[in-house]
Length: 507
Image (cartoon, rainbow, N blue to C red):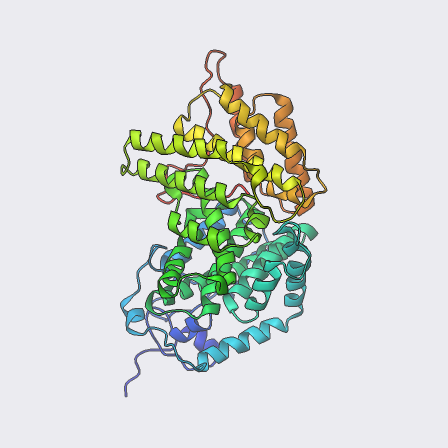
């Protein structure tokens, strides 16, 4: 039998039999590794073949990257080459011809992945990073039960990461970035974190590709959703911007497959937890532009119904308010796309605004008896009303009475939550929305002071809210005395030169 060609670089390095599939060796893909390509046709894969970084599996540098957008451009190239469907790539003919098999018994490649996980878990660095994630990051991801054993970030993600290599890479990357920033360890923050992050993205791309051809196992489905959330949290902790909006959009293909195959019910609480958080992050990015909304109202209603109190404990926004603002953002998207007339759109907006004004926060059930939950609910309610007012008329002067009433209601609600209360970490979005229309210097100072309190408590600095507000305030200060038109913060989140806009995660 004539040879079909040389083995890929990765298989040759490992002295392992290669299946020589094009464009990527399926054995490498199934292990979550980067296929090094073939001598006659190399892809962008992050393996240097010569020079100082020969043999490195990703570009590693001891110098500071130019900026977060530079890292995002690299990630976008990876997604464009390796991710199917909604993430802007199609399956190649070779991949279609050789889909990953599904059997009831683990095959050789599955066993090799298990061996790789075991090898990673034995590393001292892994133990350090997983401990940091467990002890320092998890408690700040959810209010009230942050340091308890039933914290879902501990209960769901850590055990799953010990079985799914892509999620393990994502957790290690996020933890390395956070720990590196806290300790001033530049190598850990930049080289180690980026290496694990790129491996996680490649593993995620492969799982999404596989989900198009077959039904993933329950652990595999949940791991995809968890990886996406961890990558987004990584973005929030570093820059507050998820470049090109690829992560949340990529979750939709797996979400649809999950719903088609079995739906969501009480026994899939892990999947419901991840989907609820991703659906809220989808709302957050759509605040900057409704056309960026990805999840449907049906999915939001499903997760709101199936979710437990952990939804509010992670995201702050009451589920009823979440559904109202999600529905109105969907209507706004339909109007932007020309599917809804202005009259239909305006009626929908006014109905939603009335629902929010009529919503009685005192009659609702909250995660605990702490009365400050009511203040959190009020802050989110008026932040959403403010967004609706701006969707109706983005140029309305900020001094308008209804605008300033919303600002005052948000600031009054947040003022009742002290800096030592864990609920304060949920307030970034309401504070930001109030800040975008705050005119008095003392109000602006209060908002920035609260941001500093949250950063100090959570040990995570998301620069986006502060940066956007300072741009709005500077532009408003530069207006002539007779020009009182609103300066919209959303104008600073749009990049005209790119087709897929970045996600601004104000959280």
